[in-house]
Image (cartoon, rainbow, N blue to C red; front, side, top):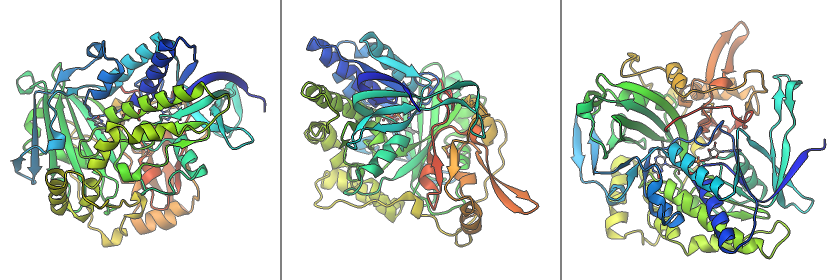
Length: 541
Ligand SMILES: Cc1cc2nc3c(=O)[nH]c(=O)nc-3n(C[C@H](O)[C@H](O)[C@H](O)COP(=O)(O)OP(=O)(O)OC[C@H]3O[C@@H](n4cnc5c(N)ncnc54)[C@H](O)[C@@H]3O)c2cc1C
Ligand code: SF4
């Protein structure tokens, strides 16, 4: 089929902090050199920010470098005023010294969605073309196995694959360089890593799932600028996880829980853990008589330095969380995503000059290796993997790496693939979660409602099983269908039918967190981008 095509110098897939920073940097460099370059950003959310979910405490280092004169005009909601760090048991909270990596002096509590809207306006003012509501669904190659752009998905195809009255074919957007800024577990990024063997020389990527709610709390309980992190309960000693509580402006508190996706117990339900966490005596009083305003969830990278893939391929590069540039001990990936985007943009701009064809820009990894970003990630590389031995050994290892060797240990700890860690259900302890009360704790469906998720219902399913039979013979029979618990949006359900149990996939609820793509024990679930514009419509996340 002939596709309509558009040509650019650079295409960026994803309007998160990495993609937007790359776009701004490219245009700034072009303007300084009095050159015209055409830069386009595609975003699958209905608007910039609609699919963005973060904590978020921003370390402003990259923002200051990107917009040195105007960074303070960005929506930096509330400066951090103080940090605390607690170890929780089921009834007590023990205040611990805040680890060096978690101190936030000079940082800001923000909504990353709002920051992205601001960065998008800066990019557009510099002449970038931003197309929200368009998912990049395929990579386009030339006959020399080089990437020459991406294809957007078709719109207006019904469940059976027939064209409806609203049918619009996909387009081919072509460029000399394609920057993948899809965030954690990007669909095209995964495909490119496999095609060009980009992960052959690194450790497996590991992940966490982060669930977040925003509450409006009572005026007297609100202390803007407060940052609290907790470890311990409700996680057991073998499971990596912890919470964040950030007091924004306007009586709002962002509260969330991250669970490492290397958890072993298939009965664990990350959503229910967040609900249970809110019943702790440290948290419950803060939320009393408050109102829950929003809900969402998103996977995040935890592999760090040793899990970074090769960053380039002929015709393109991986930036931000699509590559895995998150600093886990800091729980911060915004400044690192922005920095990787900026360095990619510099390398790209320098190389665009000399090339008319889609080359592999090796200057990008060289720039990364010489940057503060490499030093920062390298120095903390052994902290997250140390928690594979459990919470207390993990904390001892973290203290050793932070205060004794300061990241200079002569070893690098290895990572593991998260899908391979589940125990059989019959060998794991069932977890009894309390029923939601509808005031402090909630069920998944009423939560998804707050994420304003919408998908055109009559479209081919965007969640597919490679082999339908495994849903029952492996997932149900061996692991008691863990997808019905780890999915934070009640997409997966086992329904009993006359001829036996069946996995029902309520794809219209999907909030694009990518957890199923990561954690399914046989890697049998494949997440494809649905029609552009579908998915959550977060505001202020
Ligand atoms: C719960 C949680 C808490 C966090 N807390 C913090 C914090 O406090 N501080 C901090 O610094 N970091 C934090 N992070 C990490 C931080 O949010 C990420 O590291 C950062 O957002 C990564 O930026 P990115 O641009 O690489 O990707 P993203 O922010 O994920 O943006 C990717 C964009 O690409 C779009 N996209 C993806 N695929 C396609 C496609 N095929 N076609 C078109 N568009 C596409 C997505 O819709 C999205 O808008 C947190 C993350 C989570 C999940
Ligand atoms: S279906 Fe998968 S990607 Fe969608 S919300 Fe559930 S776990 Fe996340």
